[in-house]
Length: 290
Image (cartoon, rainbow, N blue to C red; front, side, top):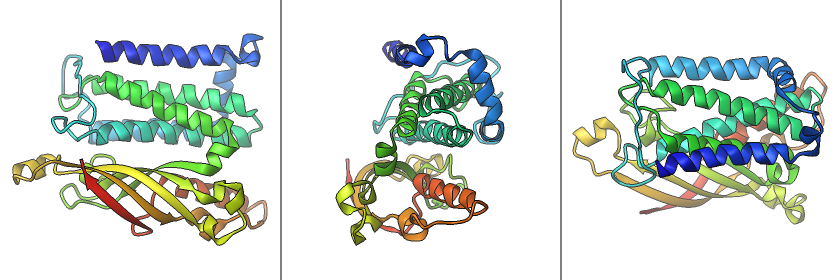
């Protein structure tokens, strides 16, 4: 249960950091304010809740176990179920929910600290709901490792909401090209996924007015051969670390050009899409097997 204690510590750390905020300490934030922010972001929060519920029922075998299962899954080793891709998926989902909800709250006029806090709490609540129902799945079970990665993904999203500098400099993205074994299943087809950090040169002051702003540096991880179908074919599970150079599509296609108020939401959410999804074939990568 060492990992379990780590997860509990991380959750306690989140709330201790929150409590250190002067606004929270002075009674400026509580359950009522969080409820107001859930209502203000109801489409985003409700959409995330509905999406993970649909995936749980159709892809994660929720309800297949009649009793609650604890399932230590490990981290990124060769002897794990996906080489850690499921863990990075938890971090990515938590991060994305946090970002989307925080963006809505900022648009609603919430201060950055409150948008970061409410989006983090909402993301963690949704992901804890997912993990609890994973406990009733024969294929999953409740894994403390997932809770830890949920926390890390949410924390990174909250930092980006608090810091425009970090937001403009670093994205956490998923690239997906179907592997051919699962159809189009971007959240369970691990052999079609890559997860990466994109360091955008446009976020560095000295490059903001130069052509270099259209480029970004990548560092990522992916696995192949861990799917049941691949194991049955006798393929050897492999894990890869990668680095690369890619195009910053947000800058290239959207940039900072002005638009009408009607066009602003499309422009904003277009940038958000490119900040989360790595479009295939827009980068050159070099991978090393681990």
